[in-house]
Amino acid sequence: MFAITIKEFTSLFKSTRSIIIIIFLFGVTAGSAKLISQFETQLRDLGLGDNAFVGGLMILLFLAGPLFVTSISHSIVNKEIDSRTIRFLATKTSRDNIILGKFLGNILFWIICLITALLLIIPFSEAFYFSEFFQSIIFVSYFVGLTIFLSTIIGNPSLTMFLGITISIVLPILGIWGMFSENLIIKFISYLTPYFYYTHENTYYTYFVAIFTFMYLILSLIVFRRRDL
Image 1 (tube, rainbow, N blue to C red):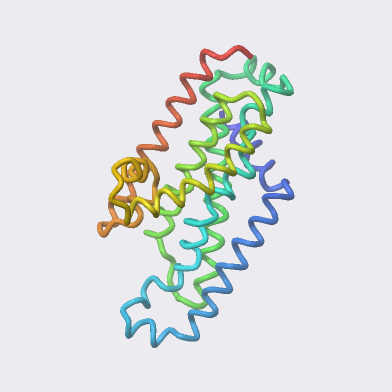
Image 2: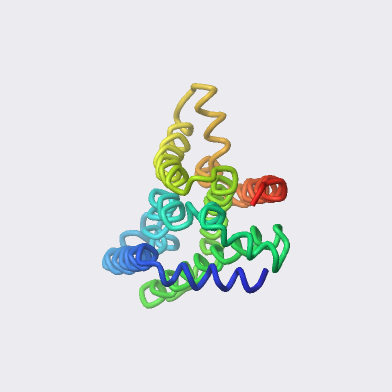
């Protein structure tokens, strides 16, 4: 599992698409922190000073995070099934280790990216936002787990790319819409997205999102164990 984790982690950093996302992520984070630093006094008067520096990163993750994750990981499993390299991996380790290794490799990639992004804020904020860091990791892990699940149950990489892009656009809309809608169906769907929990007054609600990540992983493991390679 450790070898698969490292392989997945390094392959993400070698991807052109990932490099573009990293540059965009760092640019927006540093740029918003620099802009906010010019209005620090006014923001503190409004009671926003403590979290304003990390605001740009969090907004970027909420709106574009799903697209970032799905665009670089949509074929994380089915690509190897399609190329039959998964058979080689299955002879070296268990199927559970393959799924868990790929999940951990992706999470490690985002951990490094988010730590670096938050370190870029320190010259302006003079603080490292540990709470927001963990909340960001949990938010991203939701979509990593969902992406792995889709890539496990769907064999066509092109189809998972299409579904990934569609979901990354639809979920934020439904999640935010459910906050204001009285429609029971829309509200129910919003409860299945991380947006409901991240917009709740009590911040500890954000940690409930990890339950969904765990469920996606369990479902992926069950499907992958039974799948013909």
